Length: 65
Image 1: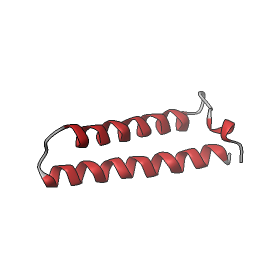
Image 2: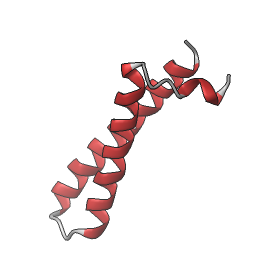
Image 3: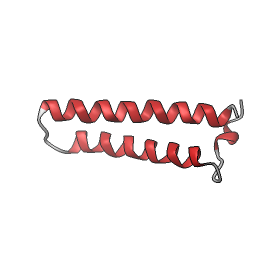
């Protein structure tokens, strides 16, 4: 598997992966910097983890296509 195969700017999956990874980072930053209710933090963390997992799955698909 070549990591360079992940970089495919003409493939929409590449841009979706980039968006999901950016969104995961933004959600993690919000939970660390804002004083939120516990249940709100849990919901945001779940979304961040889901985005990261889906982004990793897309990266795997890009590397193996």
